[in-house]
Length: 348
Image 1 (tube, rainbow, N blue to C red):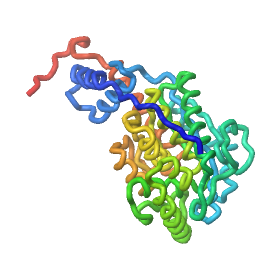
Image 2 (image 1 turned 60 degrees about the vertical axis):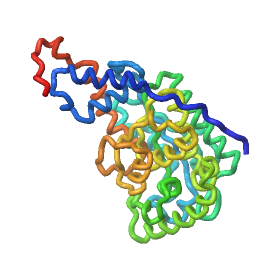
Image 3 (image 1 turned 90 degrees about the vertical axis):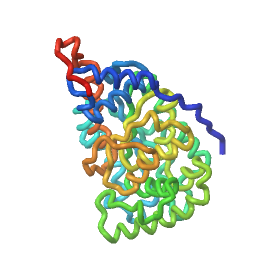
Image 4 (image 1 turned 180 degrees about the vertical axis):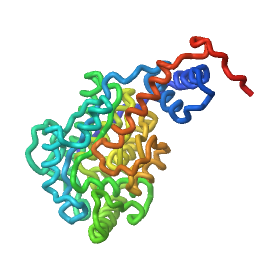
């Protein structure tokens, strides 16, 4: 297996963050009265290295599509063939991400990393489906490197084209199972703590999913010390590509809105491969999956929203994007007391 090393991750500009918080204290409102909106705007200022921050000009969502062999074990409410059908629906404009992206003002790209079928977005395809992780590796050594490189290339392509905010979405039947395994492995959690309802499974499917996660986690723990080997063993081409994408975004000083379960799993691995990357990520929401909460706690990220979204596909991040946009516009558009000719309150 060829090697892959990530560059050192720079950190956001703390003076710009401090200046944004100071600016908020001069705006025509009580100090601190906008709560986390003030922190969010300051985070964007730190990422951009300037205060006031610039409104986002080209937010971009990349949906990483892939099939997983574990889906054949009945861990999802969808049949395995639905992934390719969902990709086509998304490309035709009929999916949830397209609707939310249009409202949020974001561009959308779909990349087929491991769909078990033909799609018109297979430029970065690594293989047809990934292995059934309860009994075999998801990928070969060369494939996991190829998938990581694909994610890096996708991040570079979007940033080089002007993207100033990125979202990694997932699309694939059964992706919640490897995502939960990666999170359980990296947070030291037991299988039962990470098994969720995902696509809306019943009790019988939940038990099948729990058994699959238990067996896969046993295999994953044997390679826990090596993040790349962990992706090879218990991830998938889509999850490995998302990992490379998230790490490279941080290296390229580009903020990321983290979506749901799959993005959180990839983020945990990306932080292992590129320490400090999490400073460039904002948790968009807390999804309904129990493993997602564990991942966010491990990354020390506080979600912006909690709407019980569990779809993936960038849906939670796109829902939070207008909130982040508002946080930036507060710093750019609201007048100061001096500009408005308003007498400021007396500070205690």
